[in-house]
Image 1 (cartoon, rainbow, N blue to C red):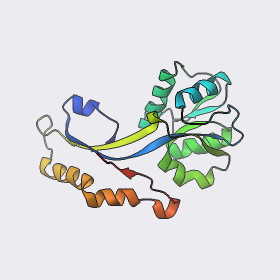
Image 2: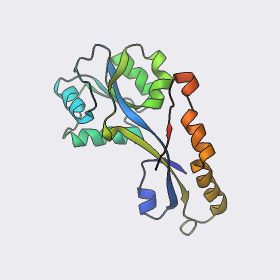
Image 3: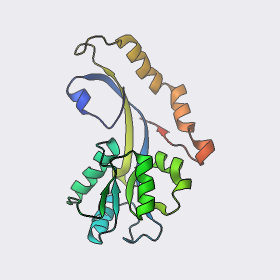
Length: 190
């Protein structure tokens, strides 16, 4: 089971042998004319400004990891987003980016999806990136065989070890470099 920033499975005992595999980061993209004039690496300040100026903000609204991250940023900024300028798509990242492009809106996305879609998003650009709160960490873990029947724990353990092996980590680090000029994910360094 490969999960992004999920601790509840380990806390509940449903998963064991949790290890960090890789990371990328979240970025805020927005209209090239940047009506909220946001920039830099402070995502909380950017969300506050977008809300204050009532700029369009597109949300996946789909209970995904990215959507949960976005909601956490709004909460940290002390804002409950509502109204006509908060546009919920209920769709995946690619479709939501397209809607942000069409609606001249801001959107939180992971860098890997941005790099894969950027050429089709002619109205958007990265406006906020690099903040400490924007790291997007991926873990691998096994289903706990002591809590769940019919689990192939031997092969699950092998899969976890495969994902953190140096050979797999090298593949992760090189993935996307040729096509996008940079890696889509980075191997996790202790």
